[in-house]
Image (cartoon, rainbow, N blue to C red; front, side):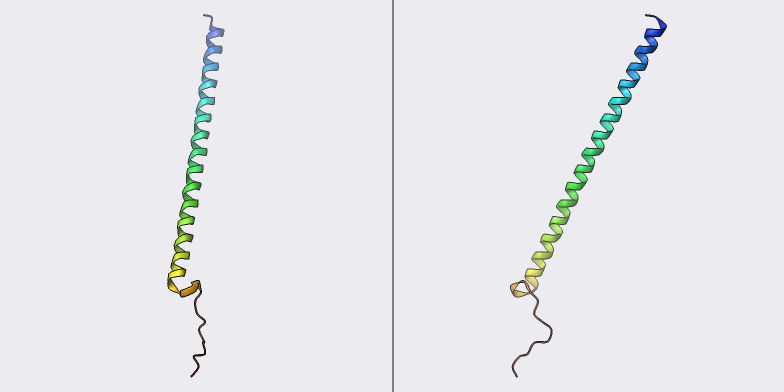
Length: 73
């Protein structure tokens, strides 16, 4: 093997290694971003469901009665 071919193969393997490292890092980043977004959506969904259930439990009919009501006496 000549020096030129050794240098070429070394440069090629370094380029492949750098490319695969960048590719794996970007796929890890995309996966973690998708995972974080899905957790955020799930958390928001749980919080909104809890607010709705608390609102329904706090007042009959799902609405709070007005403050100044005429009681008829």
